[in-house]
Image 1 (tube, rainbow, N blue to C red):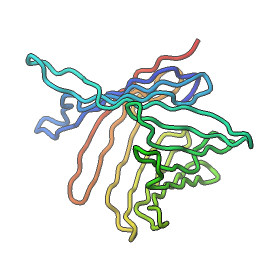
Image 2: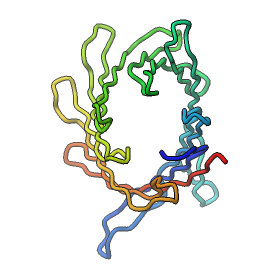
Image 3: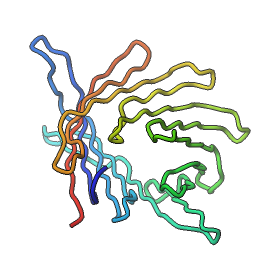
Length: 205
């Protein structure tokens, strides 16, 4: 994202194919992301819709928080919490990118590890998940355009079989060139789900 973003509210929709063209259905989810002035995400709250008194309202599904720190050797880390429970520890490189993650259980024991690799142009990001024996479980490859927006995501199992794909298109942008409307599709096997999303940004002064 460009400039100093303080908060992003993203609302997601499903798109149904109708005889008179595409029709956007009711919202299926909403995320609120908050960042510090250094650009680090410090809070992520995901909401899902429920019906109350005949109207659709959003309620909190999970609240995620992130705490950043540096050890005595100068290595940067980020601890992630879900609803106050610590769920992972990430190691950050000098460019501010997460290069590895240890996922922990309720007793703070590592149960899975994840490695992250980035191409020199930062247009390809590969994330690989391993069990405690070092056996590969899944790999996710993200491709980004020159503006840093994700355009495709492909997930494969430990045999290299594609299990899930997503693609994204960006339609409108605000004055800071951050996208405000997008569309795309999630593909799992023979099932394709088309979606749209809208974002509203609040910036630091």
